[in-house]
Length: 253
Image (cartoon, rainbow, N blue to C red; front, side):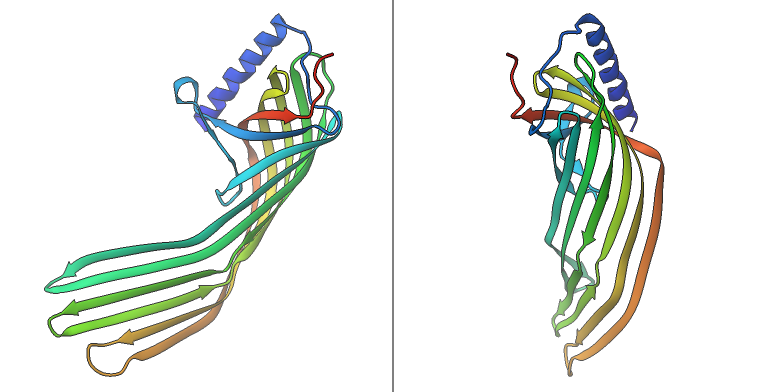
């Protein structure tokens, strides 16, 4: 957070200095222009670029579309998940123990908002707006198998867990500023203040199968329901720095 604030201060200082030195206009987005953006992190030698991120920490594709010279619609789309697997082998006394587990889950996120830009001359492009966010937390399934092998044979415990997903809804107020380094290419800072509601969980099902070295396997099933709801008010907001490039903007005549 300190690095971001320092980067913001440097960017603002450069913007103010450049604006005072050169008030000539640059090409900015107009009606039907489109833009894409990436986050900027670090400063000077440690500078880096990364995708936007949703509240779950997943990467997003961020884009803008200008329906008017001073009105831009913004959209963020994210999709993450898949199957994650781990395998561990160690010893327990004279026995060999193997642990194999996998988890499957798919999450999705969409954010739709609008920006109202304030017309200025030169390179500065301030704006304000709002955004609605919707996140879908997918169902998760966790399967694990623990086997213990020694000279007498192999015993195994298998667990199959299934959990319901959830949903997240949020509304965010936005205030931002772009500084056009050159035609259609801008460095921007954005302040966000918002509220989110998250509900996760529901019915769950856990099946445990115990297979001893000798004798018949035993199966134990556990079912129930667990729901977690959370209301979050981002009273301090967050600040991010974004590098944007715009397409289909008219060139200087």
